[in-house]
Length: 211
Image (cartoon, rainbow, N blue to C red; front, side, top):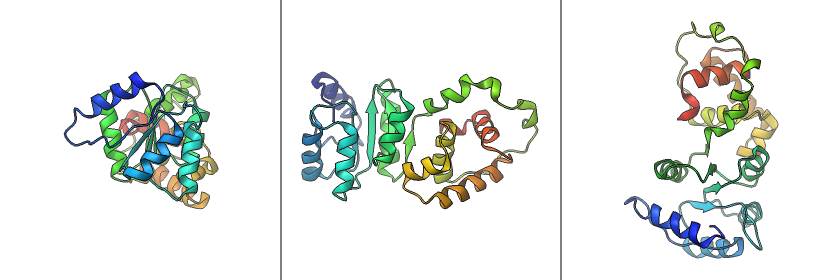
């Protein structure tokens, strides 16, 4: 759902190139989006943040108030960590910027349709820009390969890379804070590290944040 007609039509045309996708509707604002979702019951909703009358965050809030749990992928031009967190708190299951490739977009839709959560790895940029604060790679390069992480652990790891605390992650993923703490402890053990910063560095070294 996007208020810019040419953008909306362009995205629809691209998605219709994929034989595994069926676009069942589109809307120019949040109110129209709510109506389309109610009528068509889509498997995945693509949603912009900036829309007239009812913006993306308000639309997510309304869907949640209605008890509608349609997996929602926010597709926007806004590269803003606070907006990412607000969207996730409001019920979004994924967040991508509009500069993604068609394959990445289709992959994200597939992930959400299967019950997963996806936040663009660009959230790790703040950590990468602060590389001087990271531990020396020599401290962890000789560790054995990390154990496989569960899908939930990978979701939490991506938010850790964005600098979010357990409480914020719990709010974003609708989990109890204690549950998040347990997942964090598990992924630290599987990665063979003792803190979050080393966990993210190790994940970057093994390409885990790009999966």
